[in-house]
Amino acid sequence: MAIDFKMLLREERLRARERHAPPPAAAAALLSEPRSPPPPLPQTDVDWALPSRNDRPEYDAEAHAVDCGVRGIAHIAEWCSAEEEEAMLRCTDGAPAHRWTQLRGRRLQSLGGTPSSSDGGMTREPLPSWVQSVCDELVRCGVFPHDQPPNHVLLNEYRPGQGIDPHKDGPLYAPRVAILSLSSRAPPPPHARRPGAAYGVSSQAEL
Image 1: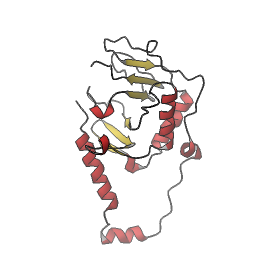
Image 2 (image 1 turned 45 degrees about the vertical axis):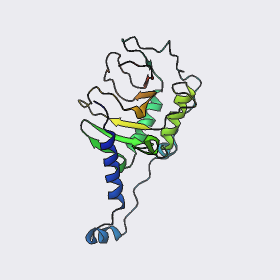
Image 3 (image 1 turned 180 degrees about the vertical axis):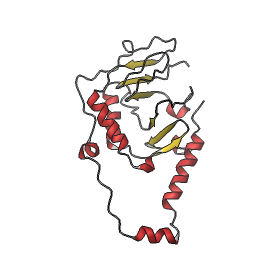
Image 4 (image 1 turned 120 degrees about the vertical axis):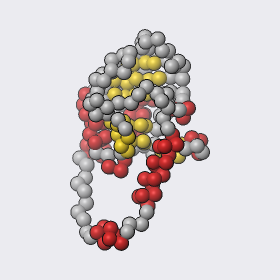
């Protein structure tokens, strides 16, 4: 089942219209009343960035290849530490509510822009700084080449018992994607997924 980019684009446009639509009179009166600002996120979440560690595993196409009958899939165990994993989960949980889109079987944050049939396939937006630091570290470790860094992130939250069917992502995600599994032991066949593990699929993958 391929990702429906048209549906994602419609949902993003609808949210944009709702954010910019003028409120009705009654709502405007309520909104005009002074409100206390929301509590700030903990400083560690606001300023946190994935550190560049010399001991972080670097991508090796041969050593990390997954022997599953599908070429082009790699698995790097313990790519991030337990402490880094917890920090990323806190950053995820601290995201504004409007960042999340509730879908069947998951919640989603689409970061870095909106899939588009024009503009070279993407209407680009800056990634959150902590997400950008993860992307930078993926490049430094060789998961992505320097001239093709990741520029879009789908942050999925799956509750116990949730999931999506096997599917193929569209051509906008070519030639390479990476999956960073956090706080999960759900096994994607045929290789067991571990918290803190990174998975990569290159353009040579034959599905």
